[in-house]
Length: 189
Image (tube, helix red, strand yellow):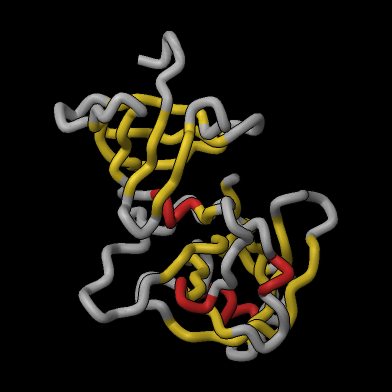
């Protein structure tokens, strides 16, 4: 039902776009240089790292500096890490300047998912309404627990409700109306 981590798509590092500006989705975080040729270790936040193929335009850091992927390859020791090189970064010193930067792609450039599947960033801000018509609040965050994702719903009084994203709880997601309809299982609130 839910796809792609993109957990920091609208977090503090991303900021809110001004009207008419593109929306950026975080797909990874650059860690430290690896070797002397400009390669960096990247923590991969996307479920689709294969889309970061050579020539792909990405945006790095708070200033969203446009850069082109030269190469992306697995970092054998760790599942969620990769080694990335950019066309514009061919030495260790240049790579060092990118340390701890977030890597983004434009939201309007990501491919659509099959019907019934959603990117995390699409759910953020949705109004959450129970099957009895009670407005709970809005989706503030998506937590990844390993078994299934969990929506953090922030109510108007500031309290938060955790709702597992499972078929028995999430009945309907309507992106056009900006709503998520849910069924509250006993003990959820």
